[in-house]
Amino acid sequence: AQSVAQPEDQVNVAEGNPLTVKCTYSVSGNPYLFWYVQYPNRGLQFLLKYITGDNLVKGSYGFEAEFNKSQTSFHLKKPSALVSDSALYFCAVRDGGSTLGRLYFGRGTQLTVWP
Amino acid sequence: EAGVTQFPSHSVIEKGQTVTLRCDPISGHDNLYWYRRVMGKEIKFLLHFVKESKQDESGMPNNRFLAERTGGTYSTLKVQPAELEDSGVYFCASSRSLTSSEQYFGPGTRLTVT
Image 1 (cartoon, one colour):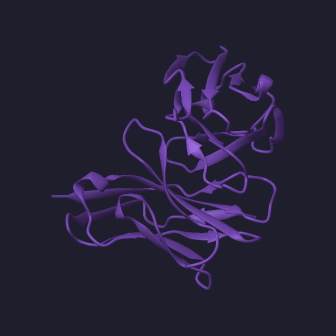
Image 2: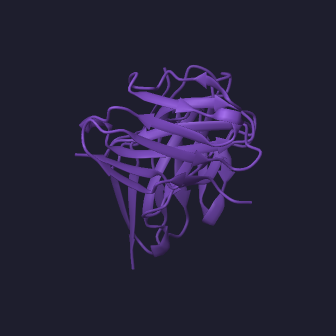
């Protein structure tokens, strides 16, 4: 069975500091991993994905994520946080070997960046 | 290109009433998905269309939910009769193909059943 865990409901960080939003996953086949961000009153926006290749993937707005197969993790990172990064972040996984495209999401992590 | 659109943005109905949600995917996207997020919980899959066919409807909670995608363009999700536990945000997403992988989400419909 597929599942995603985001162990932190909230992450608070000062502007200019590095940020990390954690995600661990469980999948029966090849993991396809995604990060989405939701700003207030908006839909989910795609940030980045890992399908294959380099374990460090770069995405929109300066975010990056590192795939770690042994730890089954896909943590989202940014070297220097901005107040405008404050939003709700979702990690998602699907089985890349499946013909079913459904995504499994975590519960979300609310990121707050204070000035 | 225009993104995924959903209508209405909000709906408040009484228990026992019927509500129909609409999703217009990105033009040319054969894959259309419905998801739901109940307050504070994870986003859960409901079903997946490929063109007009239901590829996977294993996430539909019960037979009060009916999804259609006539002609392989827009989709509707009808809840009849609505129950209190149906409250939540219903998201629609689309993708061009499975191999392209990322799904593009609409803004969601917030459904409140009172």
